[in-house]
Amino acid sequence: MLATAIVAVISDLGYGGVVLMMAIESACIPLPSEIIMPFSGYLVFQGTMSLFGVAVAGAAGCLLGSWVAYAVGAWGGRPLIERYGRYVLISHHDLDLADRWFTRHGDITVFTARLLPVVRTFIAFPAGVSRMRLWRFSVYTFAGSLIWCWVLAWIGKKLGENWDTLGVYFHRFDALIGIVLLAGIVWYVRRHLRHMR
Image (spheres, rainbow, N blue to C red):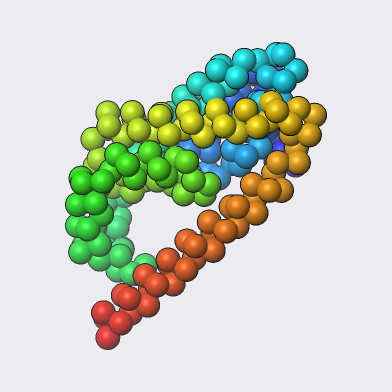
């Protein structure tokens, strides 16, 4: 159902549909870019779009959606976390660590996160909470997203009529990333519970 809706929007709106779908995906609403961009690549295969055009449209959509998530983190995220963070085991110390991390390594963190499934959808919010400089955040978001979108669209183009088989393989990789994230969350919770005791 979701895949059908994504295909319909891109088929109807062309490059604008790619921008819209990738903007939604990057605003912390996990639409699968593994469907959006390979289908765009399929349209390149058909000759109705260009590879450069869909890659840039996808990266532009990522940037627009990321600005929304960044703004939510910058203007509302910190007060909420400072007030209610202890209920989800986030302390002021953790916020200070995140601030220092984004100050020192924010560029490479944002760039690398944009090349990873699952993580790429949510990286803008903590960058906003830590108030990473917006222009730097924007440059590295666009650069990482351009590579991600170009690669997925290129794969969709190369597979031509078989583009829809990609989702199965990418979702397996998503599952692996999810397991790693879950393991990290378990470690984080255990560490905080030990510290509280």
